[in-house]
Amino acid sequence: MQVPHNTFVVVADGKKMLFLRNEGDAEYPKLELERKVEQEDAADRDQKTDGPGRTFDASGGAGRSAYEEVDFHQLEEDRFAHETAEMLKRRALRNEFDSLIVVAPPRTLGELRKHYHKEVEKRLAGEVAKDLTGHPVPEIEKILQSA
Image (cartoon, rainbow, N blue to C red; front, side, top):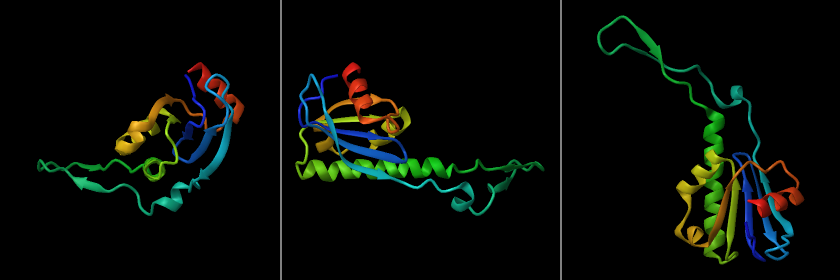
């Protein structure tokens, strides 16, 4: 994948995002970290107070069943992806980037896509469905070049 000079690269997952800018050229990218945002991952016991709810069988039978338990970690990751999309929108509307590449795990990428603003979509040069938030920047450069 070509990463033109001054392209904005966002590497995100549900808990961490890196804002990088290509200070190199398209053939030899040199990504520089502009900003790093991390969210604390609270323990389950800190996110919920009760067990799943229960209901009686509506058909008149004597059975009871439990509602599916809410995945609070996933809710937080989805909220974080939404906040990332909002941040991209604000930066696009301020013309802080002309070209954008987003790198995120498939689920996070799907959540981001739900919230892309039309200005972000216009500037979107590419997406990579991989989790690279734990990789060093030189490795991210190599992976982008081979994508």
